Image (cartoon, one colour):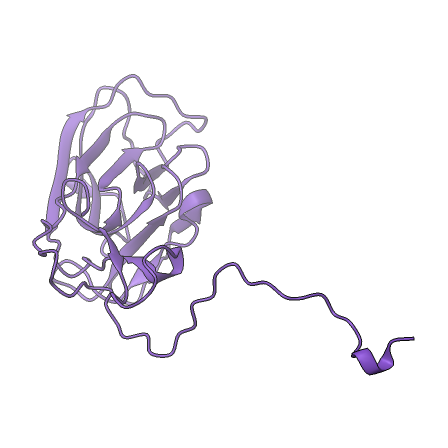
Amino acid sequence: MGRCGGSSLELIDPHSNHRLAANWADSDETQKSSWLLVSNTGVLDNGANYDPSIDYAQIGLQDVGESLVDNIAVVYNGSNYVANGAFEGGLGLTNWSLQGSLVCSSLENSGYQSSSSLHLRCSDKIWTGDNSCEVALNANSMTSGNTVTLSYQARWLRGWPGVLFRLNGNWLEATAMLPCPPTSARPADPTASARPMPGRPCTTSPTRPPCRPPISRWP
């Protein structure tokens, strides 16, 4: 059973050898989770950039896992400076850069009440140097002391549910722990990973006698 809900480790076939790792798999709970709106409005402070302006925003997970994100926005003075935060209109991943531990992230053919979203695949926690999905912001005048709103929709798929969206330079962030579906299966129920495995060999500790010629060929 998964801790605090979410995926669990499940036996693929109850007739297989329970001691072999290949006969186990993680449960598929991806269709049971729900979307969550994450938003944070705050004053830009205690940040620093190499560039004279705030040019980028970054999103990722705080540990190994997968999630969908959509409708990503950085709003200042009523304008959203993320040009492609909904991934619609054939734009794909225009303006986005998938880096480091999130390089396997991709465009997903479903979203929050839409047909597209960003599928985050994180093999290690987000790191603001190289591990993130980074988007180039439209030209803006945001600076220290301004009030800005960061927002996005997110849905957990597997692994760690903590997601983080931030402005490059540590000016402001919006983070949340996404809801995981409760584990409702009983011990005798078929698992999400269940499938028959007829005829699958189960070989353990194989041995082979040493090769030797037949007695008729002995000298």
